View 1 (cartoon, rainbow, N blue to C red):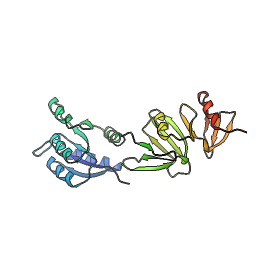
View 2: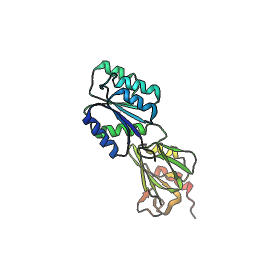
View 3: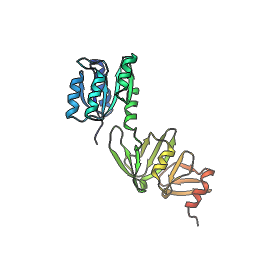
View 4: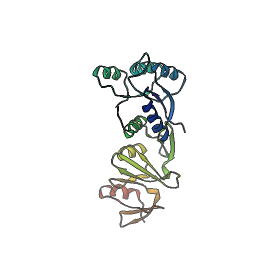
Length: 242
């Protein structure tokens, strides 16, 4: 598993320590820390970097905006500006480098981690399917996609703008996606994964019993699922009863 590599361009010692401890503790790799833009540019020429955290006001001959401009000539990277500067002229210059986010000092750790998570999960392939039998999910804090079999899915549950996928006989019993329920089901496109409720879809191959035509129990699952009236017709078409 290859963790996301983050470059810190910051000349404030306390901020550097705070960022380093925070990011390492949640599993990111700090690829480099530099107080001067010139040093950061030289580093990027020879090393892999995924995300840059850059202060705008730096020591040295060039500031953070010029540093990012030069780095983007070398490779395409995600950029988060972290700065206490608030003047309009500087903001216009910084915005012209097409950063992904601005964070104003002081910021809290949840703001930063949320921004990084949004960058990592920004593409629409956070969950992607290449056949009816398999799909891939991006692992947290990485650019690695792990393959899952649709047969291993037990049921899927909606939770606002998030979706929980529950697996059977899997070392990871549940995975949470920052993707809504409807979008998740449309990507999976699996005939055996059937929506039966506003908040639930089940793997019909895992049905153990159906009570009173609408209460469902799955194999090895203690939860009871109810088929809503609006989904009864599609459900009954798939279930062969003798």
